[in-house]
Length: 199
Image (tube, rainbow, N blue to C red; front, side, top):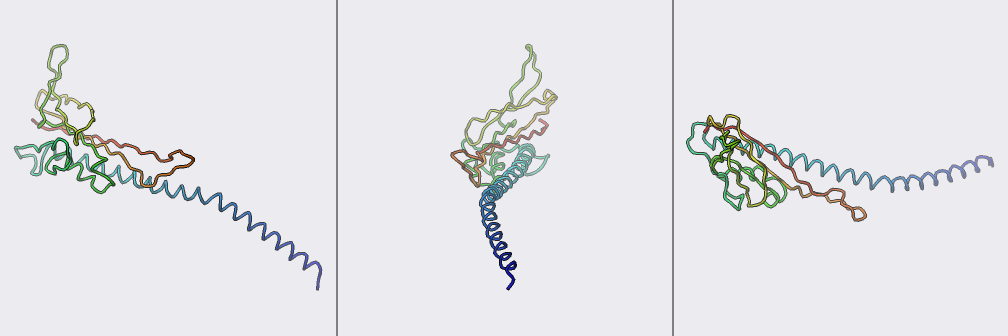
């Protein structure tokens, strides 16, 4: 038997064992990072779903606040909502909450502010002169959203802006805590839609 061959196989076996040990350490170091990236990908996908639902919710609610179910020829504008609740599906706020229905805890995490002429109008004065009107706003469910409505530049000629603000506080699907630090804190998304209505 060749002595060099035996020595060579021993050296190869020692190198293989060293490679296995270093591969195990590298895997132990990289695996938590890959796991965290996977969880962040889940959170990012959920944020995208929230943003998509909010855009649809705001747009549908703003159109409904002007047209209702029928169309532009109807005489009655729908109600803004029932104060204290998002359950009024015939109201604008209820429609906004209904469009957010696929999200987690949508009724407790969603707030809607509706500015509509159904709630009345307020004259905007400047230097003692009336320069236009803004629509009054209501928050559903009762809360503290206070986004100021904008005035339509032609509000003296019967044009009023209806506005719907949808705010959703995202409960993070996968919460990551490392050493007492929250790596994915809850965030709030806000979407505003304004549409012009002829008075």
